[in-house]
Image 1 (cartoon, rainbow, N blue to C red):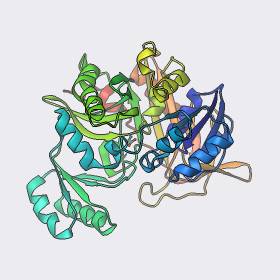
Image 2 (cartoon, rainbow, N blue to C red):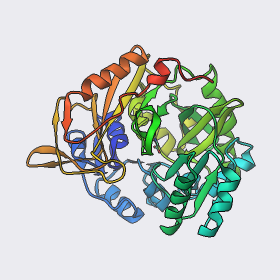
Image 3 (cartoon, helix red, strand yellow):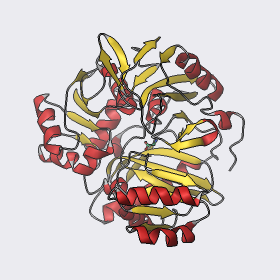
Image 4 (cartoon, rainbow, N blue to C red):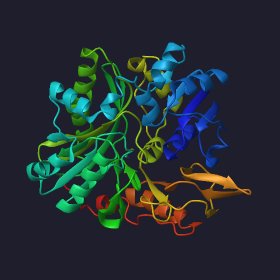
Length: 415
Ligand code: GLY
């Protein structure tokens, strides 16, 4: 099948790896993807540009990785051109694009989530801090690629972030803090049909022990040894399916990947956020354990036949990914430095995110540079394999977290 993947990060490299064997094009892509796909350019924010490229490569399926093209309406434009596309329409992608819309859908569907207040004026910030402290959750209400969130006990830091977001022209969302470990559960949704993938956990802070600024994600592992039995079913039954039904009832059925970010508190799962796409970096380990051909999965959703897809098959064991980040990520990532080492061209081990080539060598071109994968019979084995591989890679000034999966391995995560 001729397949066009839109995006340029580790998530899209993982999607391409899962689709290997088909005739693949990726846009805008990155340097590490060239062995799997033809790399083309595209304006991801322009549905017309995506359709033009899809027609040019005669795509039979277009898979949209990031949220920007979804929220811009790429899937609507592809559908209008008669090209099957994996991802929700512009209206349905509001589950990620508008936190107010997501809250409204959750309220109507009876889904547990944090209390929230939208603030648009700097003068309202102090009242909101008063109402929501002392554990502050302050979110950029625009699309921020997972990076616009500050969770802090420090009122001055919360105030400064809220101010910065409003001054940049976006509203701010204050939320009550949800207790409990976080789960990322990716659900394939096609109308009222919901099929969960394996549950995963991201590590959002830049440094070990969950210290430092929030990032797009510094590492992830799957599945979750600490999740109670039936935990995935609870997230599907209490969150994903009611939301899917509510979207159908509103006349905007959801077709694509619904990323449920939930905190597992004393009462069970409660929604932290929805995303309208695969998560990054959780996709990298999750898809590495999928045995069912990825093309069957994505095509079934894109063509409205998820209900006929046989149950998904998974490898036993665990997978983990560790992100190699550039110096000074996330604030001012340094780019243009040479990346050297083993397995840079082996997508079973290294998935590229922010890379380019210069004079025949890989160089850093973004904040999250590489995702290094490990698999094993136990979570410890999977994590060890990822760390063994990342140690073979050098990039001046780069860093990575040394504690991906550690709390789960040591039994420190309790419900
Ligand atoms: N892993 C966080 C995200 O994809 O938004």
